[in-house]
Length: 187
Image 1 (tube, one colour):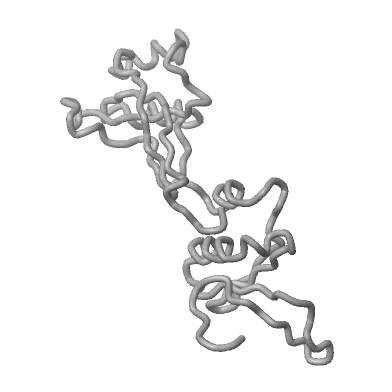
Image 2 (tube, helix red, strand yellow; image 1 turned 30 degrees about the vertical axis):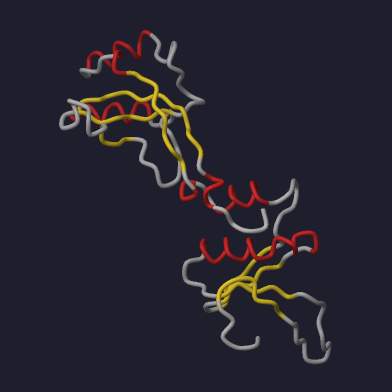
């Protein structure tokens, strides 16, 4: 992918959820915090759907697909704990969640776009300019990498990289190319 396509990062995630009374949210969260769904910009404890009758009195706990399966998710001790807190396991159901571009980190997106084992050399931010050190095998991806870096470093306006060795060894002038943003003047 040489052009950033945000729609390519839209997926449906199948996970399980449990309706929990509002009064029991704290104790259930404490016991199962290691099993809750961990996705950027997505709350694992959320309100129920508008159509649910218990919307005002319950919250929905979303569990990680790696931690809880719909069958045999809770042992006997967990079932006792849940029933003591007013939670019915009948409310343990499958849910489908739509993940978009915003739910992925900068590194996740780069891993999906770039070829295997090709990392970016590094970057630095000087004022409003993000300077990237791109390796030669990544130069064809320079625009999408620059655009992603500008999105992730919210206070920078320009992404640049040097495209040749030092032009003048006496003065150390390096020619730069603008990867993204607006080039207001020649660097």
